[in-house]
View 1 (tube, rainbow, N blue to C red):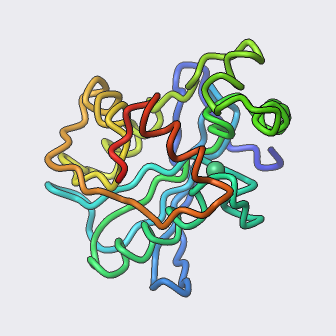
View 2: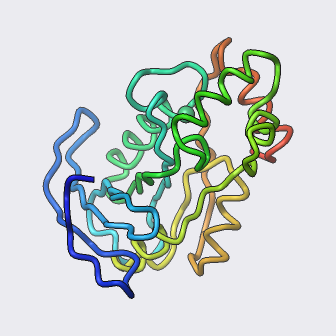
Amino acid sequence: MSDTLPVPADTPFVRGHTARLPTRHGDFSITSYRDAQLQVEHVVMHVGDVAGEAVLMRIHSECLTGDIFGSLRCDCGPQLELALQRIALAGRGLLIYMRGHEGRGIGITEKLKAYTLQDQGLDTVDANLALGHAADLRRFDAAAFILQDMGVRSVRLLSNNPLKVLALEELGIVVQARQPHEVPSNPENAGYLRTKRDRMGHWLG
Ligand SMILES: [Zn+2]
């Protein structure tokens, strides 16, 4: 990380800076947060005054291949775009972009190894397990800090993932409602989505 925000040893998370960020989805503000545990900087894309109740929110886990390169192996890219569109349309809400969540927390090299295993027939869960990783290593402590820092008291979560709801509630975040966030599948990610539904409990059609 080239930026060197001073991080006191006893403070895992520190707010960085906020700037205006007009996008093709609408006008956002973007705020950075330093995470000393993961040694990354997360960013929040937000619209309107998000302090208060029932704020529309998505937590998006970084996915270089899906978010940047248009990978068809997962549904991350279209989910990210849809979330930004929905938040912009609502005129109030936020998207927390969690860095260090690549491949459900295993990192890009291990994720690429998992892709090779998937091409040999393993599903996404078994591929991670075969590489010696837990099925999901992601932590959401930073998200809890960010919401508290922004004054968000309860959220309407854009997610198909029941574990994410539980993880947030365990961190003290009030999930007032969950709103389905499904994007169309393609032949390349049909198996990935089936695994999410059948083995990770996602609510998917
Ligand atoms: Zn992805």
